[in-house]
Structures are given as C-alpha cells and as structure tokens.
Length: 171
Ligand SMILES: Cc1cc2nc3c(=O)[nH]c(=O)nc-3n(C[C@H](O)[C@H](O)[C@H](O)COP(=O)(O)O)c2cc1C
Image 1 (cartoon, rainbow, N blue to C red):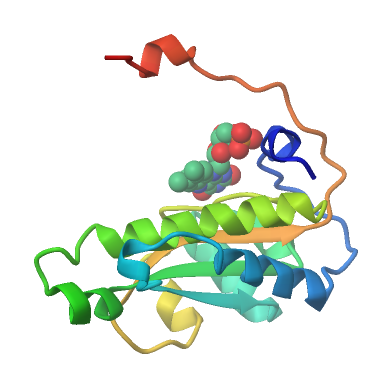
Image 2: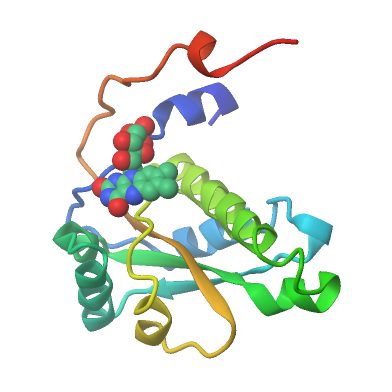
C-alpha cells in the first residue's frame, strides 16, 4: 500500500469478525516494529502477543472495562523496558525515552496491521498496574498500551480533526 493511502486507511476499529489473524500477519506486525526508530537504537520495549482468551478478558476488564478488546483475535501489549534504557543512560533520562520508544513501536505496528488489511485500535492508558501481571512478565516495565487487532467490517469514519493552523506554527 502506498504511504498516503496507508495513513488515510488507518482508523480505530473496535469490532472484529470471528476470522482469526494468521500467525504470518502477527509476525509481519512484529517485523514492522524492527523498522521503528528508538533512542540510541536501544529498542527499549517489550511486546506480548496475547491470544489466550482468559488473558484477553483480564486485559479488557483492566482497560476500563472495554469488553470489545477481548473480542479481537489477538491483542498486542506494548511495554516500555525501563532497565534497557537506564543501563545505557542512567536514571535521569530514563523517565520519558523508553515510553517514546514503545509508543513509536506501537504506531509502526498499527500501520503494519492496516497495511495487512486488519483493523486495530490503541487502548491506553488503562491497566497499568495489572497488565504486567496478566502477561506474566518480570522486570522493570511500564505499559505503553494495548493494540487489539483483527479482521473488521467497519468502514473508516469521516475524520474529525482540528485544522492544522490550530496546532501548527511556521517560524
Ligand atoms: C494514546 C491513545 C489512547 C487511546 N485509548 C483508547 C481507548 O482506551 N479506547 C478506545 O476505544 N480508543 C482509544 N484510542 C483511539 C482514539 O479514540 C482514536 O484514535 C481517535 O478517536 C481518532 O480516531 P481514529 O483513530 O479513527 O482516527 C486511543 C488513541 C490513542 C492515540
């Protein structure tokens, strides 16, 4: 898909069909993350691919609740890996940058899902306390967000956006 078409086609899809997401699509989405920039190329993130029904229900519940999350065949959970960054740069710079790395990674993953013809939606900033436990991970991690992904019959809604003149300045 050409880039302009890709970004135009992306929208937040919150309903999914019962058609499963192929493992090859999951791998392609993870592969897209490898193309993302990261501070010092440290790739300070961890991504969990959740297909387990019980884990998806717990994540959906901890996200508001937002029950529709559990209906996605696969939910990608993005964490910032604070220790990866701290080891290189120390505590002082650790606060913001790992979350930038994981956020950029998630954006790349969402665009990859769009490119594959799949629907997806960011879910944040819920489940901060619970997500790591639900995913069974140790370590100094911070939740960046969830990305439920699946086939959808939703069409892209008309975008409601502020005019660029309201949020951009040229100097
Ligand atoms: C950081 C972030 C958090 C979001 N959290 C949620 C959420 O918890 N639930 C939800 O349904 N949509 C969530 N969204 C999706 C937004 O509602 C959506 O991107 C916005 O309404 C614009 O619509 P569009 O993505 O279709 O262009 C989130 C988006 C972002 C970027």
